[in-house]
Amino acid sequence: MQLYQMTVHELHRRLVNKEVSSVEITNAVYERIEAVDEKIKAYLTLTKEAALEQARAVDAKIASGEQIGPLSGIPVAVKDNICIKGVRTTCASKILQNFVPPYDATVIDKLKAADSVFLGKTNMDEFAMGSSSENSAFFATGNPWDTERVTGGSSGGSAASVAAGEAVCALGSDTGGSIRQPASFCGVVGMKPTYGAVSRFGLIAYASSLDQIGPFTRDVTDCALMLNTICGHDPLDSTSANITVPDFTKYLINDVQGIRVGVPKEYLAEGIEPEVRQVIERAIDKFTSLGAAVEETGLPHTEYALPAYYLIATAEASSNLARYDGVRYGYRAVDAEDVVDMFMRTRSEGFGDEVKRRIMLGTYALSAGYYDAYYLKALKVRTLIKRDFDRAFEKYDLLISPTAPSPAFKRGEKTADPLQMYLSDICTLAVNLAGIPAVSIPAGFVRGLPVGLQLMAKPFNEGILLRAAFTFEQNTDYHCNAPEL
Amino acid sequence: MITKADVEHVALLARLKLSEEEKEKYTEQLNAILEYAQKLEKLDTAGVPPTAHVLPLQNIYREDQVGDHLSNEKAIANAPSDEGGYFKVPKII
Image (cartoon, rainbow over all chains, first blue to last red; front, side, top):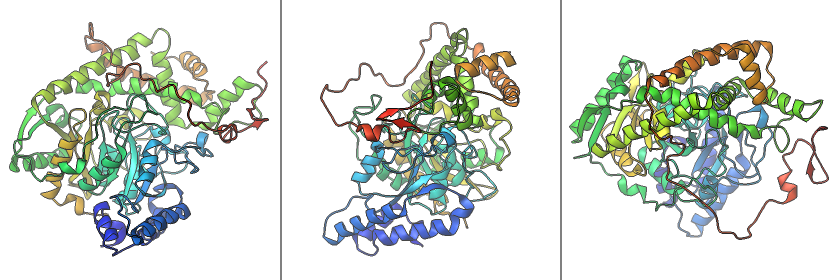
């Protein structure tokens, strides 16, 4: 096995045993990027010189006998809506194409303290709005399993980088499924932690009450290691939860005996491709055979999640994106007649189609006369969706569903019909509305394309997700498959 | 039903200058999306409180202590136009 295909924990073992250096690992990953990124286009910006400097510093620590942490010297890719001081951060938008943050996001601070090596910034749907990573202002990212297909969105670059061996692990952000859906399409592990578990300071906001940063990894053990590093209270984020972070590796137990699992029937109903349903049913059988107590259940308000989500998310987006006016940072239209003309032309020239569509929808939903009918109604429906989950978690430790209704679709297949595109997030949106944690793990293949299984738990119960996901992984080999490039 | 005039009004509120082609497209697309959103009306939400936020948070303040901050130079480093330590914009009046 090549260095660029290994997990974080395997590379850590080799670093500690001095079988390999961080510089060797980093160079191996950059060589892989040079070899395949022309096809995949996972990265918007590479930071090779800084990365090698970080790798050399870790090697010096190892040489001097200093103990290193599990992520020390490990190359990480970062979605381009997470700020790294001094590194261009574009959100895949023309309006931020020259933005260089003067500060680090808290997750970056934490990874720097852990001595991780930053490879660069990954492609995404502009401002994290999309389900295919085709909405980037710069280029679309190709799925490593079939480059004619999408990676999923919006963290498609991060998911593809891990799947293609162009990063060992990566950070993404998830507002309605933007970590889990691309993890499913690319055949990797992707977790959306509980809202508030990971600081959002330095994450460029899309919909603040839904956004959450989380990891992409090759296996569940690496996911636990990433969570150990990035979770925790942050006074710089007023929505950060002030709770004690456990050692997530303690949940890596190969046993689901007695765990109560609910399968919401609404997630296996119409709209889910029959072959995807078969993969999920096989996964459910696997959990049963391993000793979990599995039964069918219901989340009756599931069908309302998509409209509620799109009204709430776009309303918040219209407010968050009001700050892009060409004054303090980013693109500015030239030769404006006056300041209002400058605002309007800057925003019209700087934002892409999907972003404008969502700003328009959100502004409409918040405007006088429509606020109660759309936005307030959606917030009340959000309460009903949250109550569905609360009720389910009184009875079950976990809920199981497909992560996406289909495997990766062809590029361009859904770009002309926004509603069809929005439907590809149908299995993931409700999780963000309720703020609960969820993980997508590889569960099988359909027509040679990966299919993800979604596991959901009650708030701050990432541990049970890791235990169930780890058990599934130890008793299957889907995560061992890698695309041929 | 959203009309082209509604789209023009919303675009003004959102500070977006739309081309005629965009106005037509967004009129059609927003209508399709909002028609789909109408299904929320089927639900009786009388007496249901809205959830704006999933965490039970209130009054989150930091300690009132002097801390580090960005220098003026760094704060305006990303500005498309600046002069004398200020952001520069076209005429307002």
